[in-house]
Image (tube, rainbow, N blue to C red; front, side, top):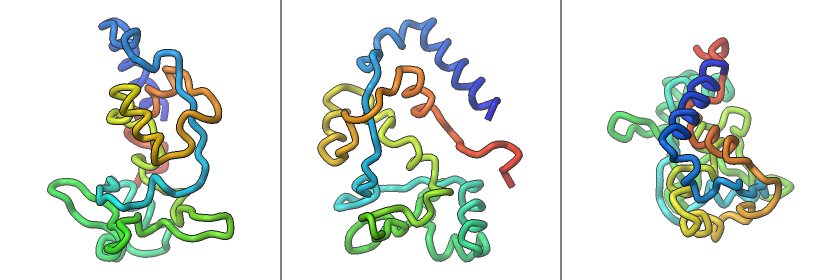
Amino acid sequence: MVIMQAIITTELISQANMGKIREKWYRSGLHFECMGCGSCCAGPEEGYIWITRPEIQKLADFLGESVETVMQKYIKKVRSRYSIVEDRKTKDCIFLVDTPEGRGCAIYDVRPNQCRTWPFWTGNLRSSVDWNMAAMSCGGINRGPLFTLNEIEERRLQQKWWGDDDAK
């Protein structure tokens, strides 16, 4: 975790030195609060839910299954990367489940980095138009607590969420 924070800090300093941070349209921060609706995990569009090898191991441990079984049941290979499979009809993530409160993630504790960094993805942050387009399907965008520029950039640049002592 310390190494990742150092990498993020180095990247932010590098961007600041190049004048990029001052240019960010969201330099004053953005509001976001997860509403727990599951819209970010749902179709109708097909997409990829990227997951890394260490995350697959964590998923297998969480589910109490072997990596091989998890790969067969829940993962598809896309060129040199891996993605969690989606429901064929709805295009929802297969781990999006109904709960008494609504919809939720069956693997929330070990969800992939892609899920953890939503909505602070580079594609959503290219412009205020892109951000507000994402808000059309996510009721948590533009509400809730303010995330500072540094907090947004930390999430956007995050590559892993587990500590080195956790990695297998």
